[in-house]
Length: 291
Image (tube, rainbow, N blue to C red; front, side, top):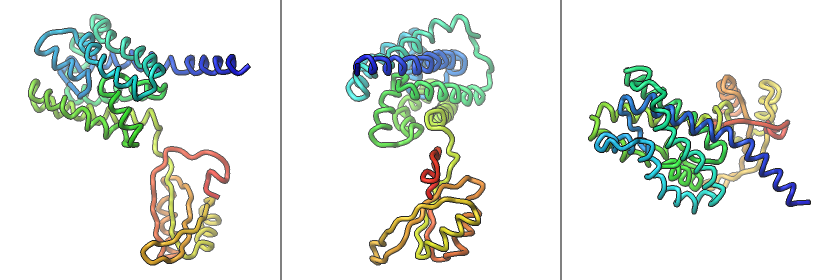
């Protein structure tokens, strides 16, 4: 009975993820043809390298991307889930890379606009959104995205920062090939691409987490509960420099309430230590709210 249930679970997962993989791959191909290639914007990665290579050799961009992806797929096979990674990423890579060449004849040759800034911004937004869709379906877009995903999974560094590290060399080559102004626009595209991918993958940062180290836990917690309506969780702590016992209070708060919380804590315990952090989302009942 277990095996059929497992098969049904896998089937549901495939049916859930496949639309994200297909949509992401097609959007990426359109993005390259509409916003990147017409203005020679090479924002790192295999697509950027293929655009540079096309400038010197006139080789088809999509085919060049596919060839460069092959060794990176081997690396991803080893570190990102073996056959589960390979099947999902192959779908994306084949549709994305070949789609660049196949769709080029159906899309405006000069793109939508000649404005470099608009091309760089929308190229980053569209590419990042498509990348986020693929990542949500546990796939990758191939290329340096494979390397970025490995580093992100192993270190927790946000994808936007990893892209800046892995793709910097391609942008330098773009500067030497197309001029440094184009390289600066490519850097904008790369940054927006990473931010958009983070947003689609993780969602907006709409919650603030408050950590309060205090020697007056009961008055502070009571004030947060009665005056701001916040649930609070408390645990004991000890300062390692002074070896003095303290209490840490934790709660989540919306962005508009941050100033009110800060003022209230300072009013009740001026000697407290307050840290406000970002959270992607909060869920659950009173326990999830920190009560």
